[in-house]
Image (cartoon, rainbow over all chains, first blue to last red; front, side, top):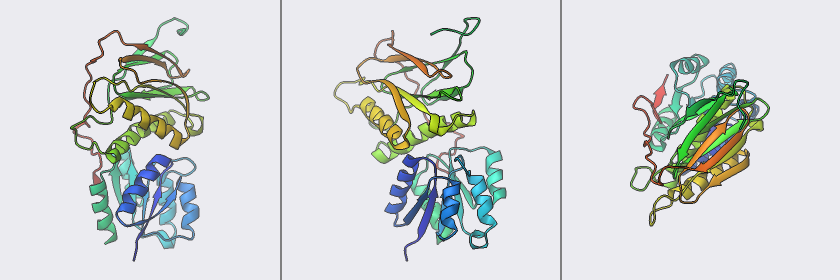
Length: 121
Length: 182
């Protein structure tokens, strides 16, 4: 059964990069341009994994994760943060919000694939 | 360019691999470009601006495939955009100028042209309006950028075409691509 990954990033270029990398790995991809758009889709959708940026308009990655963790259908869904940020403070905030893991951009396709396998399989 | 009330500028030199942003009207950012590209972004409403200076790849380096180059190019641009947003810029207000991308060597893969093509494609994909550029040619260029005004001056560098460029490698402490599970 094909697994589905939702990618959340306000950069069209990054969404295209992720789509290319993750499609090559055999995953079906759903993309959202920010946290608010992701939340709208996630009221009905149940992807196997969510990969989200932090710095986004309308609703940032922290806010998205916090809201999802308050929804029973997404309380235990794997959520990976993919961001240019690398501060301990931001990581701690993501951990507290309920993120599963943290990946620093630019992503390494091999490491990303391994991380996805770890959370999905 | 006119200075501030006292006529004194604060000159900020940006080296390869660096990104600088500012909301200080007295700041002038300067950089020298060979085949590298500098993207100068500004928000005319918030009066915030900045620039990066990146070289995507050179022949023989690991990760010179187009996908690798694009990952690092998108990263370089995202760092600049995020830094500007942190200073109060709005993504929808961003305007850009690009400089550099010279062909510095004969007979070799034209890295400058590839860098320039990436920059233009990125701006188009991101719907950031390109308001000016001076790319290509065979000479190094010196760029001076007033970030709060979005004004730039680009001249052929006085130095010879083979401008010493500090090669950028990610700092040892930067966990680029690393994954941490909570």
